[in-house]
Image 1 (tube, rainbow, N blue to C red):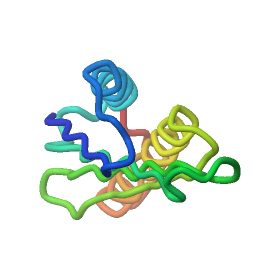
Image 2: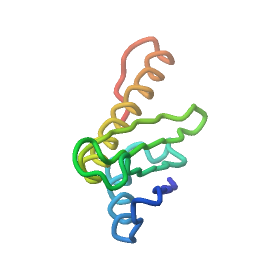
Image 3: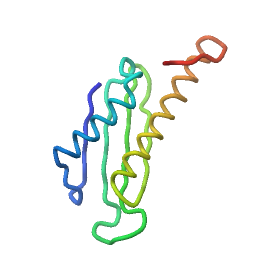
Length: 113
């Protein structure tokens, strides 16, 4: 599973930030690693310099082999909350998509893990 991290010019993409995001994605999506070919992470500063409110956004997109992309985004007061929120949403979206796939293939509900 490849992990690509992109940020706008208002967010400094440090090696520490990249390592944190990569570890979070790998740990969270490890059970789907045989189905996921790539995860793209986009980090944005929504109001660049203005303090307060929902300032940061993280958008994550996972490419599932043989299926369309699954995406999720989260806006929050800081980058950590935005990243964690998007990660939780992406995990649920992948679970939902693969669960629906299992139901349509077998005709009944099964658990993919």
